[in-house]
Image (cartoon, rainbow, N blue to C red):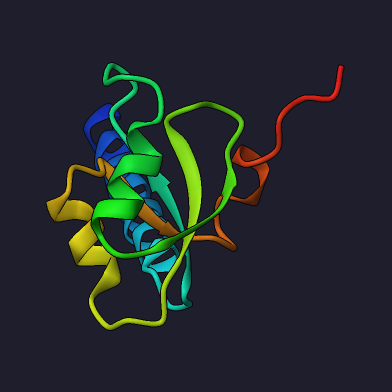
Length: 104
């Protein structure tokens, strides 16, 4: 039994969907430390402004000006960050590689 081209497309589409669901589930903020990703086209320090407006504490800057680590023990902190303009809010454990600046 061979798989047709249409069959391979269906298999690949399902695999991509499962991978996306798993990635999104892993990125759901569960700790008080969050990665805040602001729109890169906004002014410098947009991520820091968003964190401050949402009532959080700035822990560290990311590799780029539009990424930062935030902390808050308050409930619904992630949703407040999104309402203030964050493009994406992730649990800090998921995106650890995006945080450090190159030391070269």
